[in-house]
Image 1 (cartoon, rainbow, N blue to C red):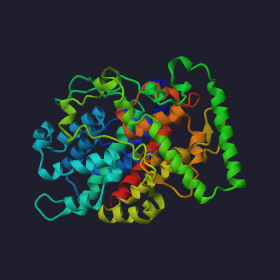
Image 2 (image 1 turned 120 degrees about the vertical axis):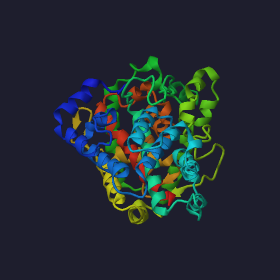
Image 3 (image 1 turned 180 degrees about the vertical axis):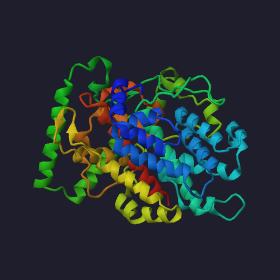
Image 4 (image 1 turned 30 degrees about the horizontal axis):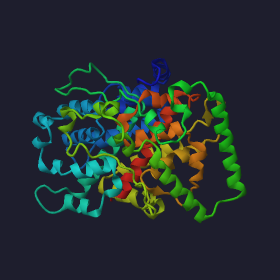
Length: 443
């Protein structure tokens, strides 16, 4: 990783023999690749991750093996993730894929091309997906998808959109020489920092500006965060906010998310600030259509009545799990295990402090990600988000969630400065919990 000291990752891999066992048992690449090494900082999660990914790519399922890897390539290309693209170019060829398909989408069967629309919406604006998108793919005809095939494809798309966030958010390094891989030239889009862009929104952000890192003692920040967590727990026990007040706080948070590194902010800056870094090379664009399509804030500025999806109306537990498991046998169980692992993963520590109940902080992180996609939990007080998540952390979360290819080391270093790197990686695994909402909502 370009973000995490090598000695911390190597030490974890050395002492944990289980990681090597898991790689032998479930790795699709057959080696301890960089993703696996970084993720092995949390072996419990790594096991769940590898088992589900192995099942998607290797075990019996509706889709042929080469198609699975090509879909992974298409998904990774939406976020310009050359690391994942190269990995699955190799796997595509090893599983008997037709080399000509790697020249671009115009060389693949029409039914694979037809996934383009749902791929781009699922990656960037999942709230725009309607039943018509599904109906169009499964309609009668020679290029139609069966429902089991489509479920398999959607699970792969959502998985690799989220995995691209993990790659960029953890600063995963390339596996080999970056010049050429199967005719694919690796690119870098991480040469600029959007930290200063957030400052232009007239919101004070001393912790992100380079000259101010020493002003606020990071240890004091940690103590203050723990105090706020404790106070919120006590206040919740003493007095519960009304449903009306909780709704108001959600709407406020949703509007405020507009001012955290929004897409409009990027486009308001001069060409020299970032556009050169955002160019999609032909090596990536060959696998996608409409390369200019990206994330836009779910809530647009100036709107008074913002549409909201109530999470309780359609849930993974009550609706998504049974549907997915029925159409793609056993994947529901594997995904459910992974989602539960993500949600409950904690060592009850914060930096050097032990026996800490981190539930309040973990839930704030989960719900802030969902808030950016207009998803609201009725039983959550969104006032806690602003009290627990500092500005620099919000910038990092929104970037990793919405446009991960723009993540920089400076962003990574700017938040939770007293926390261990393994604790930051633990946060990155939580990005996967949003995957379950995507899969559930689409069907």
